[in-house]
Length: 260
Image 1 (spheres, rainbow, N blue to C red):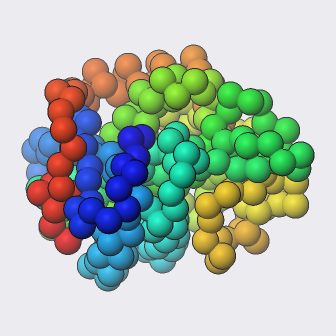
Image 2 (tube, helix red, strand yellow):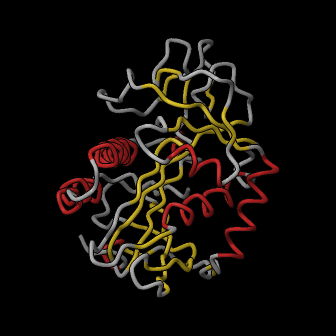
């Protein structure tokens, strides 16, 4: 992720990366979803985004909690400067100038020996990273769109090898609380072991950027996607969802991309 060194610019920058073809769950018609990468450590956009969450109150409480946590984490990241931001990914899914999904990954952590790693899993491999947050929502309750989460995962999987990572770890919600586990399994993730673990177990590597009220006592399903599955999933999603890469150009003011 490109990070500007200018702390005083009033503009919040983003770069369009790709366009994916999703579809309306109601009419079956195609819906183009664009993926943008946020670029600047400035919390002004994060503040507006958090205030806009009241527009999505129709989502269930678990999904709303995840979205709120993801937005709060985004704010903390964008308030933080320095080289630690270089590999962090913050992707927004956009439909019709409206945000409808967010993905945050590669947040640096510190292991028990003080080393910088990118996965919270105890004794993780050096080239393992983590999908830290993923949340999607319906921008228009009258026109639900399917596949938004897949577009975010697909775009993120494209970057994993580029950032010199091999595997991606994720802490999935429990299956009785959401369909997250089956969703991740459909995208190449595999359950690790047969135990549920605490989000913030004592042996977990601690994120260097985190909210004070992270859900440390929640139980989750640990899962991992290997390099082979990551590559295969990206190519399948790209083909099935007609991914179109947007020619690389200058970043733009995010207010030109979304309205909140």
